[in-house]
Length: 281
Image 1: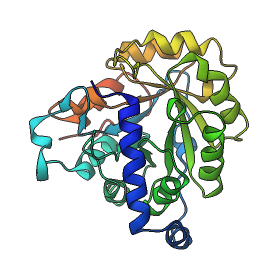
Image 2 (image 1 turned 90 degrees about the vertical axis):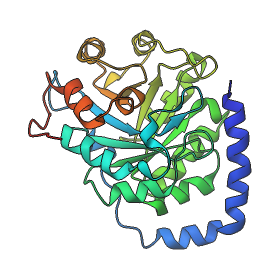
Image 3 (image 1 turned 180 degrees about the horizontal axis):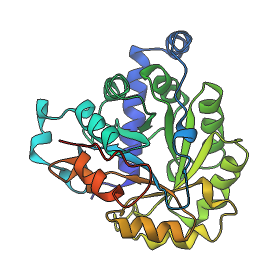
Image 4 (image 1 turned 60 degrees about the vertical axis):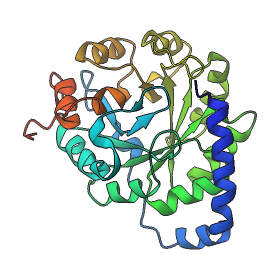
């Protein structure tokens, strides 16, 4: 089984190789010409107590499951087409996996998606170096994922601060309860530029438990800043999370496993506000 350490070790090697091709100074210079980012936090603001805002994920494969659907092999995978379907179905934002070795992603997917939909794009990757933050800005991301389990000590706060300084919002993800206080301190001090994601998937065992969010929600003062991630499949799951004050979710593999990810999202959101009922294939 691929571990989080395997992924971060490979990411570190890839980042060092990428730095040799494109320097940090070059990325900083290119970032000056980037357009303003889209409002990730604002897009995820619920419009009522019965509304759930969904970050819909474009995900090609996973270390545990391999290729999610056969048609995602090679040129058959179109991240921009899936993003368009998500937008039409009512997604508030798009999450895009950009890790290549383990998830079949590409940083170029971010720019391709941004050109096709008006909603914000979250770059989801294993960001462990400031170079990747600048790369994300240049690639057209509006927000980045920062995983607490990958960023010990003060690294989480340092990378979040850098992201905010260049105009990116952040989604700070945790699974282990021991990282909750550290991540929440960053979110609370970010003045509306960060959200706290609770990953219901244990990255050491890959087991998923939706109740993980509800257990940790009791320890967070402001649940409106929470995002529940993984294991969300039905309208009842959304309703359960809303009972605990959690009205932002990230849904990926469940949607990507369906023949029509956009229709699957429309079905998930159907009973709730904010849905675009005109969605058609």
